[in-house]
Image (cartoon, rainbow, N blue to C red):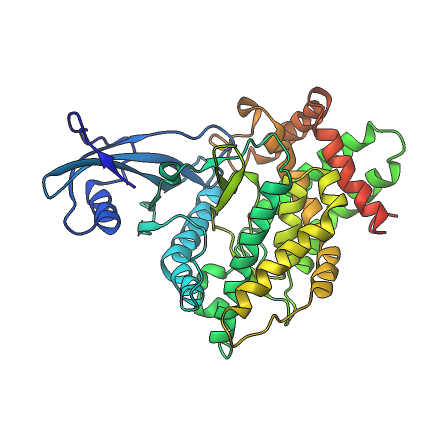
Length: 429
């Protein structure tokens, strides 16, 4: 979306050296057509601490001309994060490359599976240019704010209206992947699309140690939070017993089964979702963001990840059947629109898969929920951390989570509600 320009042109700025005039020009032409002429551009930051982990995100404000008509628009620019920690830089490079390949190679194929049947493409931002040259990585995307999309308050648990929109779109994403796998049924989908290789949890995941360390420290913090609540001794013991083998459990939970395997978003939680609202402030459309951890796994992994990180316990517990039902209806509608493919699993299969992968969602909720509920200035920053100082950094983070539980009345109930569900389901006993 663009609007007419009524004042002087912006001068080029180079706050981010890898966002170049050439890349901005290519993005502009991909968006506005070959006749668009770039006149000027500058970057303007709009995110806050805690919004991003792997990438640095900014916006690019653009002045351009089409047939003598002066206009302006903007794009979102994702640049690879460079930190003091060398292993982080290696990991961020691979994750950034995964996302760039997802947008340029995999997403067009997924969308073809939908649009060829008259369905709308997936609700993801348009990608106009992706430069994946090592150490110069930049992706220029549609600025969804121009269409009224905005982030949901990360401190609030999502209500039913927001949750249903997310689940229905996540189902379309999974459904498109089922159609794509049918198209390439005799090929290894991960070999066909290397962006699906799991750098954290794959058979040769190169960065398993880093995520393992991070998860274990947050589980230790969760156990300390639970220690402060009378009657939850069995939960505290369960967390501490699970902690040493948490990576093994996650690896097991991520193993796909033949009839349920789909391409997972991999990181579907509050921070990676935008909504558009009507005049009554009712959410009417959703957009999914950040495809850096896309992988092949069962749908129960994505569903548990989202429902445990982004909802409160009462909504998740009381309306789980309805939420899974809305997801499944969207999935079947997406698949059946192709006219030559039936859903490969039933609603009962889905419910069983969700139950079997609850530990996956809860482990990641212990990592993510404290980030959601913290003030921006209290969220962890990896900018100055090194491989040598990582243990000290994570110990400090553990203490911050325990302190947050005392200061913030929302954290302890969010934790306890999910542990109550695991007790009810016999996972904790």
